Image 1: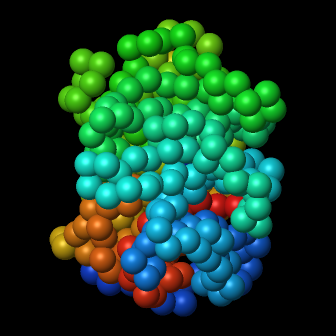
Image 2: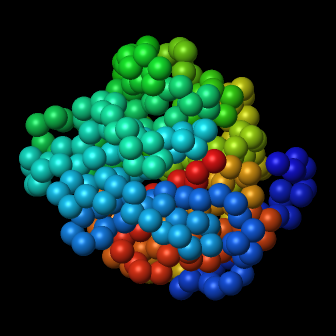
Length: 322
């Protein structure tokens, strides 16, 4: 990825693109070699779909009728993905964590009541939280307790050394393997903030990011997040500093007009694009109702963006396939 100077970043990210509806044919999507996974509500059930970056070749890779597959996260080698499965209804509903091969084979339980997962950069481990209550289901992403690390090689799970971690969602492992970021809502003494957790110690630090769902660029030099439900910001980040994100290093990237939302930001493996969900005001939580939402792609160099799905079937949580 190109190394950006502070001046170049300011020029690049200081333009805010605003829209009340989708933009068309503004990016050369066919030149993007990567595919994506995303969750979508089809025929009364949530399934996970695969799609080319230009919107072609869409395929339902879970295709079940009585259970809900959600929140796909692809392994760094692009061969497997971890995902949530919801079964039951109402208060009896439950969410468990699974993984399977990208072709739909080899489904395996990772953790009962596991959610909000992410992969380590070497692809060996899956970090996740657990449902705060196993007796009463909650759709709320922040309804979690603890941080756990699953070893895909041995099948063993260990809890993080800091046992006070709670109410976290949208985990993201730093490319250097040293930190896991998360948003905390109403837990650990915070009202609403994003933190970076040291993988090997009890230490964690506030990122100085107002909003939620922080996500590292592939080289770890930048971070993107939802400043609000209708806008994304980007910034340079230095996890070895007391305040990882300085105010001077924050840049507005994309916003939409009132009545619409953008959510679920995910960097492409080459760092040139961001995939996200866009639609009218809806429910952003995993499996939440978001009629009219579609998957979109934004180009980092220009800020231009456009839809790649058009059915509005609650298409959310895009994740690039390396």
